[in-house]
Image (cartoon, rainbow, N blue to C red; front, side):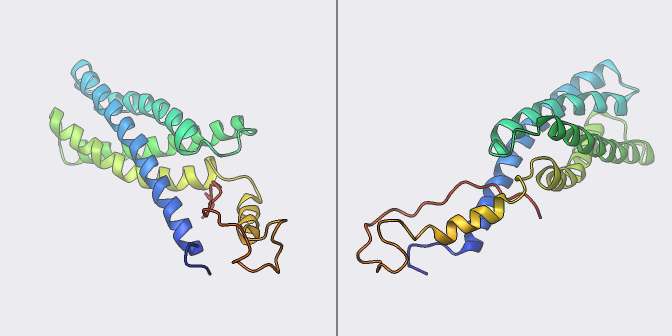
Length: 189
C-alpha cells in the first residue's frame, strides 16, 4: 500500500460517518417539524396527544423523505422509485407505531399529561424509532443496486493500473495523480 492510499476500512468508516451525519441532519429537521407541529396540535387537541403526535409524525415523515431521497441517499438507484417509496412508507409506519407506542406507554402508563411531559415522552419515542429507521432505511429502502459494492471494490483494486502505465510499470514512471475515491454508496449491512 502506498503512503497516500487509504486503508479500505477507513474509507468505509468515513462513508458511514458521513451517512450518519447526513441522516442526523435530516432527522433534526424532521424533529423540529414534528415538535413545532405537535406543540400546535396539543393546544388544539389537549386530550388526544397520541393522535396529535401521529399527525405531527406524518408531517415529519414527508419532510424526511425529501431530505433522504434528494440529499442523504441521492446516489442510489432511482429506477425503482415506486418500490423505494413503498418500503419507505412501510418502515416509516413501523417507526410511527414504535414511536407512538412509547409515547402512549409513558403518557398514560406514568400519567404524564402536561405539554412539557408529552413533548419529553415524544422525544424518547423519536429516539427509539430513529434507531430502527436508520437500520431499515439504509438496509432496505435506499440500498445500493445489486453488485454495486463488488463493482466499486473492483474499480478500487484496479484504480492504480492505467492504460499508459500498465500493471508492470513502476510507480516512479507513472504520472503523479491525486488519489481519488469513487462515490459508491454501500448500504447493505
